[in-house]
Structure formats: structure tokens, C-alpha cells
Image (cartoon, rainbow, N blue to C red; front, side, top):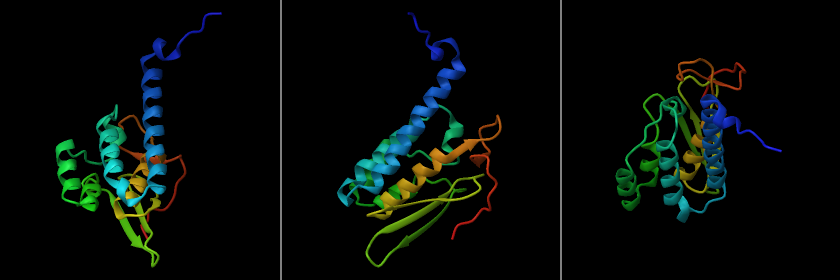
Length: 162
């Protein structure tokens, strides 16, 4: 029995599958950050930069910036991982950082147009920030055709960072 490939029959379906695959990869990276050791933060930073650079639609980036690979490498080489993570945030992104007495870091990120922040933990500031950013990108949903407005699964929530 011959099966048809829906992705080939419609460019929109193929694009949607690409977006879904991209979001899965970003989500996997966010989860990897939660289980990463400090020595792995440079790899995670490079992975996030690469994924952002590979976004198939500009609207997926939700106000983030994509530094050049060269700039990311310079920051990592200078042992400035937190600065490298902050380089991914655009000027309209909100964030909040916290560190527990046990050394675990917590980062919350709210993307432009989002109704609520997402949070993640990590062994370093950079890992926590990359994790929160990844989760925010996975949860973000385009609610209009202009790729700029973002909602969280269609649920109206109060905007906050606390």
C-alpha cells in the first residue's frame, strides 16, 4: 500500500512540521540544561545559539537576538557564560534570576507578548537562563498571522515576573 507524504503535498504542512521539529529540539535542549553540569554550559550555549539561528520563521524568535557564532565563542572563551546567555535576550525580554543557598540557580523569562513567564533551574546562571528561554520558546504560540503576538496555549494569564 502506497502512503502519501502530507509534508510534500502542502508547503504549509511541511513548514509546520519544521516548526514542530525545531520546538522539540529547543525543548530537549531546555531539559538537557536542567541535568547539565557547569562544564557543559559552553556546549549548551552554542546549541541554543545554533537553534535560534536555524529558526525557520523570524516570528519563532519572539524578540530574541542571535549573536554570531564568533561572538558566542569569544564570550565562552572569556569565561563569560552569563554574558553569552544574556546576549540571546532582546531588549523587550523580561528575566529574573535567583540563587538558592545550596547554589542552584533559578531563571524566569517572559518573552514579548507572552502572558506569563517560564522558569527553569540549573547549576549555573547560564544553564538556568538557557533552560527558561527554551521552555518559553516551546510554550509560545503564535495567535495571529503576523508572527509577533504571543500567547500561552490560548489561556489568558496575568503578566508577571516575581
